[in-house]
Length: 220
Image (cartoon, rainbow, N blue to C red; front, side):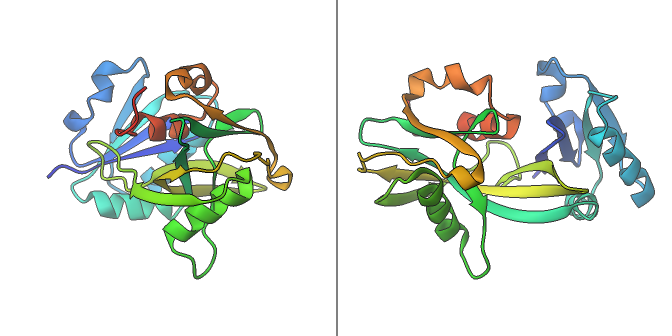
């Protein structure tokens, strides 16, 4: 079975694949893609530099027969952090969104030592939004990808972090006040009908839009 990882670096798309012909986005997207084969670690580092640079806005496909080895080598250039979060639906069918640092987002946060991914996801949703009585449902999977999570990079002082965020569907009967966690720079928390999500997705990070695109049991 073909392997394909989807990663967001500097809000550009990067695919790691064993066969670039499997990346249909090359044909269907308006993005320009650089296509490279992986041979040496030094060359991979140069490709990462291109992705992190604002000079070239191209997305990229890197291919190698051993995709897991390619992924391991790529991630060696970053500090790696695991996070977990949720797509929460209330009894009215609305989805929970937060507004943080100028973007609409889904509640999530870093997995603490000794926590499972599911435990971290529920805790972070509660802390960031004030929502209680959360019922954990299934983990969100990503169509036609090897990903079990979303991957994206961000700057933390002088370090570039690769964050792996694991996502879960959640439900709640909570109808109380929403409380934005201000020390996490969250300015607003709100319930949004699935049919209205398109009004918010234009002001979301690409990795968050990717999560929403892979929700299958909600009618938009």
